[in-house]
Image 1: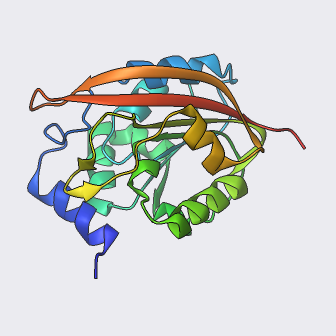
Image 2 (image 1 turned 45 degrees about the vertical axis):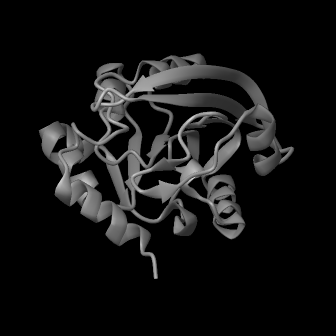
Length: 206
């Protein structure tokens, strides 16, 4: 039986975080969309599936002080903590499968680059959205990046689901209002092209 945690720990065991296909030296589009949310520096932000991503480093540099990173892989989180050094002490770290995550407090922004598209089972997507709704405050910002229609059909040996704005809005439901869509052609460390779409939603205020 497939075990997500075992799979992702194995990925980070076998490869450097600089060599995985989703590695970005600078997460420019994520940063632009986060800036567009116009949060105050102390509002809580969570990077879902952040793992070894450098997004948290850049958010620290931009003055955000209430940051959290979630990943299913302990090895990926350890890589980020080691890289950040003393800064890691000021960040919340969650080792969890996102479909089972229980947020300890509300977040103002939820960022997910390439987690949701791995959820090929409808029950897993429903569990993700349930976790999202528990975690993101009313009026909060949701940023999801996924492989676009016509992009890759697999990643890390796993099937994925491609999205456009209509398809992802239908998954999330009426509680989330789409306010921005951006395209990205990601070039992997192996010099392959991957078509991504980024979606910024605002959760309806209660």
